[in-house]
Every structure is written in structure tokens, then in C-alpha cells.
Length: 577
Image 1: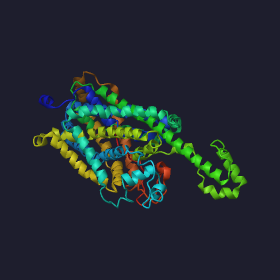
Image 2: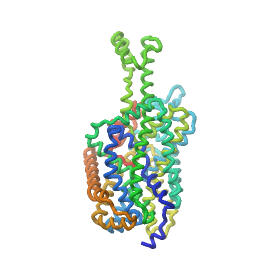
Image 3: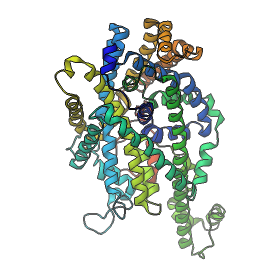
Image 4: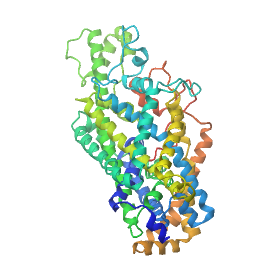
């Protein structure tokens, strides 16, 4: 053990370790999953179960993984093999799950690169619909949807009608994916020596962008509507079991538990490092970032909802003014509903002729539509950005932030794979670390080309929702049982006291031995029942013949029939960081 400690690389300083954990834990899920849950499950009221789950589940399990990694000073396979040779499979499972995640997660970074490159155009390519082949009118598919949807589904993904129609590899997306993997390779090339420097950027830059966006968002017209919607608690949602289940799930996956990344990061610490303090810091910063990102998101979302609502009202006013030959300015948003009733009763025949063209404009309904995942980042945000002043600047900032979040998470995912391989004398004696890193990136990149097919987004959705949920829950459950009941909680407590000089608090022991395992078992049973009740795998299919328009958010929330099977998104969210 002494010889291994001397040979093992270490972080340059404790700050690098903390930033690496933050860069890994704080990711895309904080930006596009947590705001959705706040919106759907009670606004500010969702923070109550979320913070409770942070205390009883998030902090204890994060501390457990960091402590195991620092004590055993090996990657996931070696660490659990040291505790018991029978637990070697737990480490192997973590590596396999991390490999699955890496296969498709970096595709998000390739999409971010694609949007970033297009953000320098004036006007932005998703700001308006393109002309058709005859140059006589706008593209029909884009007219039925919206310019941001069209750019995402047709120009970016060139999506096929169903998963059965694979199509061909989109070479632009393939090049962006290769670029994304090249960046990851350069970041992990020399292990902690290179990763420790990169995390200063991937961990800190997103906060700079979020602060800039917060300042800009608060000055946008309608931002107050979004913030009021977020912070108004719906107390009745606290009685909904789904609220608590989603709070526990968000905490579990957002911290990246079970992948082996945290164990790998902690294995490069000095033995005397205070991993308890760092576990608390990382978990609190992760949750703070989720809340902070939600404030920014709801400010932008309020602007978009207000813009859509006022546009809707103006179109109705224009229609009624032209139809009934009213004076300009006679109809206003304040008297619109009253005048609609008056016109319907006074001119029933004329009103009935335009009735189907009159939309029911509602700010509340605009705010009520819930969206998450790629729909939030690549459709809703781009819809808001195109209506801002100097949209190119805000687009560049936003997609740089997404890239930093995505790359930071990928550093953790690849480290979880790389560390156990470099710990193996059989592999490390035959291949240098640079070759092992390159091999991991090349294999993942080649497999990831599947997601650049025309049907690639469907495969992405299936991998994202079904590839590792059960595995991660089972891995972390076995981890807690192994530490508390196989290795022995008292023995582990003594190890921690020898390492850090601090005695283990009763809080951690109760959480590890009883509360956290029971919560994981409850989540496991819930997801198992959910899979049984929902039946076959489902995915979301884009039907170019249907009208979605600005209701993309509703389309993503409802069960619909399309050319593919039915899919209800968000059942088993995986994007964990």
C-alpha cells in the first residue's frame, strides 16, 4: 500500500479535486432537468422534498463514495475488490455503465458544437423559416412547426419518421462528434495532471455565464412572470408521491452516484484529505447551482411566455380589427375578452366565420407548459435567444456554457473507465496511459456514430431513458450494504478516523446503515413497477405532417401517437450531471 501511494498520481491541490467533483456533478441535468421538475411539481414547494432528499440521500452517498475511493486509493474495480473479492463485479458494473453513458452523452456536446458554430451567423439560422425549393414561400414543414423546431429536427438531426428508418450518417454531426471526443481526449491525456488544469475552466466558466444570463434575464420584459411562477409554491403537490420520488431521483442522478467517477477522483487524494468537508461542499454547490440555474431559466422562460402571449393577443386584435373594420387602437389586451363577447353577440354570423382563427391567448397556459432535456436547450432557449438584442452574443455564451457543463461531466465519465484500466498492471505494463485514453475515446466515438444517423435521436432517447437506471440504483445499494455490513461500519469508521483524524458523526452512520438503503430500495421498486405498467420501450417520434407550432413543450409532455410507438418522456431520466 505504501509503494502504491508513492507511485500514484495526485491532484496538484485540494481545490483541483473539489473543482473536478463540481465539474462532474454540476452538469446538464442542473440546467434542463431541475427547472422542469420545479415547474411540474409545485414551483418553490418542490424545494422542500428536494432539500430533504439532499440531506438523507445525496450527502451521505456522496461522502460514502469519496471515502471509499480515498481509503482504497484505487478505481472502482480495485476498491471494491479490496473490500471483498466477491464485490469485484460492482466495480466492473460501474465501468460498464460509465461506458454506456459515454457512448451517447458526448453526442450532446457535438450538438452544442454544431449550434455554437452556427451562432456566429447573422441572422441566426433558426430565427426564421427558410424558403422552399421554388423560392416562392417558406418551407412547408417549418411553417407547420416553428423555425427553432425545424432547425433542430430537420437541419441538425435530419430526423427520420421512425426508428426503423435508420437513414445515413449525417457527416456534419459526425465531424462534431469527432471534435467532441478529440477535446475530451486532450483533457484526459495526462490524467490528473491535465484534468486538474482543465477543471478550472469547466467548473468555473458556467457560473460566469449563468451570472451574465441572470443579469440579462432579469432585465427582460416578462421575466417577473416567470420568477413569480417559479417561487409561488403549490403546497398540494407535497402530498403527491411523484414529487418526492422525482426529488430523490434528481438528487441521486445529478450527483453522478454509482458510475465510479467519484471513487476514481477521490483515489488521487492524499490520505489525510478531509473528504467529509468536500462531500458537503460539493453536494451543496450542486444543489445551489440547480436552484440558481432555475432562476435564470424561469426569467428567460417568463420572457418567452410573455412574448408568445403578447404576440398571440396582437394577432387576435389585428384579425378582429380587420374583420369588423374597427379603429386602430380600439381593441387592447385589457378589453379584448369583453369585446370578443360583444362582437360574438352583436355580429354572430361574421364572428362565426373567423371563430376558428381566434386563438385563446393565456399567459398562464404559456407558463404551465413543461419542457426538459434537449427540448429546453435546443428549442425553448433558442426561441428566447432569437428574440433578444444581439442574439449572436447570447447564443455563443449559452452554448459555450453547455459545452463546459458537458465536457466537465465527460471528464468524470471517462476517468471512471480509465482509472481501473490504468490501475491494472496487466494493461498498464503493455500500454501507456495516453494509448489507453486514446483507445477509450476512439471506441466510444466509433460506437457513437450510431447517434448521428437519421434515427440517432431515437436511439439517444432510448439509451438515455433505459440504459442504466436500474443498474445505478443496484450498484449504489450494494455499495452501502458492502461498506456497512460486509467491510463493517465500525471498521470503516476507524479507517476514516485514522485518515482524517475526525470521528464519524452518528448522522452519517444512520444514513449509511438504514435511511439511504431504504430510499434506494423504494426507488428501485418504483421504477420496476413503472416499467411493468408502461410495458414496451417507448420513444418520441417527429411527424412532419403534424402541426406542433409553438406547442412543442406540450407535445413533449403529452402522450401522442405518431409514426413510431408512443413515448412519455421523463419517466426514467438518466442524464445525471
